[in-house]
Length: 316
Ligand SMILES: C[C@H]1O[C@H](OP(=O)(O)OP(=O)(O)OC[C@H]2O[C@@H](n3cnc4c(=O)[nH]c(N)nc43)[C@H](O)[C@@H]2O)[C@@H](O)[C@@H](O)C1=O
Image 1 (cartoon, rainbow, N blue to C red):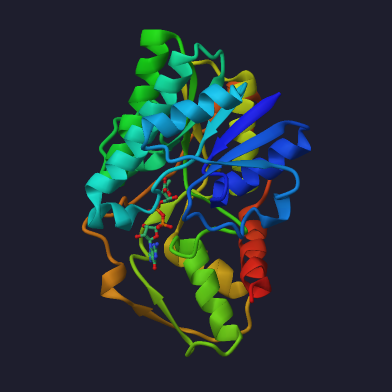
Image 2 (cartoon, rainbow, N blue to C red):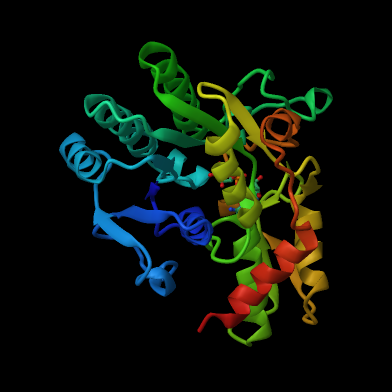
């Protein structure tokens, strides 16, 4: 069995590759010429890499025609919400065109591939507290260009299944983190600031944005197991929430990280970290996914946070 992982050099892609190798699956991954390779350098002997620009239909068609994968985990994306305000068209083009090119190439070669697409809880956007826990039937009220790009990816998955019978499973993943999380994202950003203070590289002040927002965090290692199960047992055309079923404020997440450190820290709001509109609460109901696949989160939040801090402590 051969799996193609788009965005293999990214945070989730690298964990996906590790999981697939443990299942004995052959792994091919897409990279771009500017991709950072440090997340997958330890896997270089076991995986194959293909340079592919997903925005370029020729590049995608060449790859799909040559590799003919059985499984596709489509993880490549511009995934940082604030970047999508600075360059909205780039985010929308990258995320939407990349996926259309992938679907069209699969169609062109009439591949029976099963395709997982990484949709996002950001699609739910403006959620009222009484509308939680969020089910797949909740309304979508996206609040950022990134969220719009994910709504488009999500519905394109639905449409290509309905129109052409592609085996697309739409996973709607809530926040996820763990070792190798990019340093822009809040959990890693705070963990890295704490470690920089521990190592004496930074004054004991942690810079933060909106600490009131509530997020539902799952460990990335649980998430990639979910993506595998989505293709093994999920229904094509369906969408499934992948979440922990609990949430905490960003302030509580920061306190959890601080509880694993001895440094005493002053917390300072940095206005540049505040967003034009922030999703206030994300709390997911994952029962539909559990019923379809048996998946449930296994790694407790405390351990994820501890592993994340250890990851940053181990970095040079
Ligand atoms: C599901 C979804 O999950 C992620 O999107 P996100 O929730 O925007 O992730 P984040 O880690 O950037 O922010 C989380 C929360 O934390 C608040 N916050 C406070 N202070 C800082 C801060 O200093 N930095 C950041 N980045 N956020 C901060 C911020 O305002 C927000 O309320 C992506 O994986 C996305 O791809 C995705 O699909």
